[in-house]
Image 1 (tube, rainbow, N blue to C red):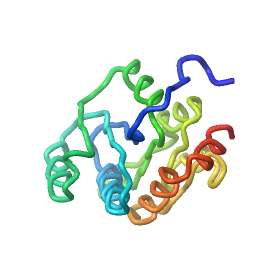
Image 2: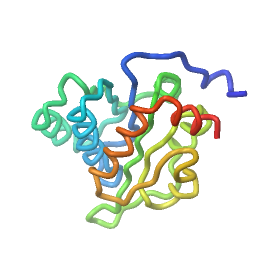
Image 3: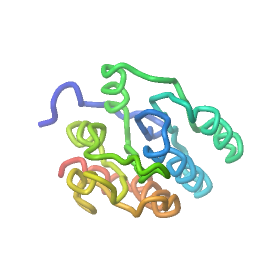
Length: 171
């Protein structure tokens, strides 16, 4: 049985969530490119990125360049309660972390653990402690760092297959 705070209801269109400071190591720009790939494949969904930071103007520029204005929202930094609410509504969580140019990197991601606790499949990268949290093909998918095409393909797969999402949620 899922913890009460994670029991969600069916939300349409499907909701994709990324969480974290707007810094390079979070890989959000790859997540935006993956979202464009999914949108170009004809999928209807919304992507919310909870967070803020110095790269916000770059995120806004990429969203505009990719024509994702009607798909992506950047509501800003959120308290933990709002993150939990986003997890309740999430269909998929993306954690596309990368090693930054300055060698900054992630360890284990709390957001990936929270998504797992809420029975939400996660698409993450083979980075830091993420492979210790996501069982590739069982509870989510792992893709190489800086590979928005692979990230997008796995997002497309999950958004397009409710049975697969449910199997991963149950795992």
